[in-house]
Image 1 (cartoon, rainbow, N blue to C red):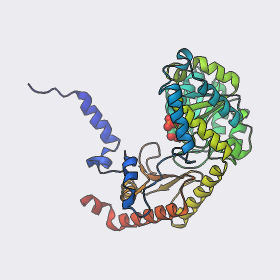
Image 2 (image 1 turned 180 degrees about the vertical axis):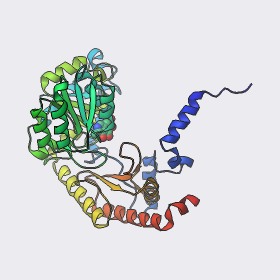
Image 3 (image 1 turned 90 degrees about the horizontal axis):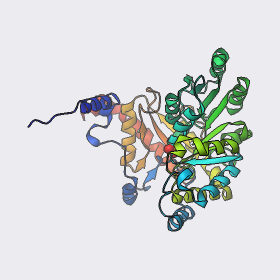
Image 4 (image 1 turned 120 degrees about the vertical axis):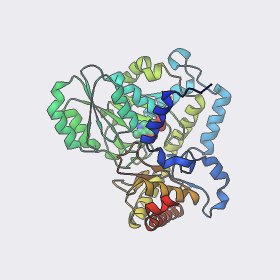
Length: 410
Ligand SMILES: Cc1ncc(COP(=O)(O)O)c(C=O)c1O
């Protein structure tokens, strides 16, 4: 009997092709790398295995205090939360951690959610309904853009970090809507630039709007003590209606959270779909994030070291003639390339040399700006940066000499 091929397979293949599958054809590409295996084989490279692919900015993921806290929590609480906290009950560690995090951030309350992505997806449509408007930076993280698209309110974007354009847009259309929410990243994860929070707050207040500020990459990174963009600019965090964070970056764990007024958190605890209808964070995840928070408070030198490292890498890259776009030298530093082939080639060469810094092409960035995105860590050192910059410059030169066509011909 002849096998029936579902039209869904044709559809999936076409969509994948349009998304750029040719770039990863044959399996020889620097994605989905099994980094533990590379770590095991680190001896083959003179500088060992070096990752610039993890946003473990403060070196928490393997810190003995963090890992032993997670192990102890498994012994004490088991491996899962066992249900939605609303109806399944929570563990004492959920509440203790959220209170400590709220105190650290200088806000009334914190609510942790199973994923950072889900946090944005769920909160925007929950807060904004009917005749409301959400207006987002065009390069805001995909979880914000998807959350805006999924919401029942109107959705507009403003050009990246162009706050005068945002001001003009709101002057023109504010009257047409009920409530207005402005949504943006604090530190942009693809470009390493930041939004001008003082100006943004002025605009928000002038237009009687609210602000959702995604501090996923800025908590633990920006400000003297890692309290984020508001500390960076010396602003009272309580002027921000909804701050969103993740535990997956500076806290070395996973999960997202909302930081807001205590009354807002109380409302969300009983109503936010992404919280109410999803499982609570595993106690071991909470324990590791809590231990990381403890280290962030007791060892602010980690933040200083991350900053020193980020600036060092940025300067070295720029001095070597690499294009780092608008990055300001805070944890995220992209190296931009002329085309996706060049970008993927360079990342492949890096990987052969034990340096994992994956290429970002097409997804989540403007199509004409492929990049090798480097996440800097407090654990890196000068040698790591010299090695990386040297390897990128050499690989780019090789690509330009051989030429794209030559490479294709093999
Ligand atoms: C700005 C921003 N917000 C939200 C998220 C989603 O967080 P998570 O990966 O912890 O789900 C990310 C992910 O990297 C991000 O960059």
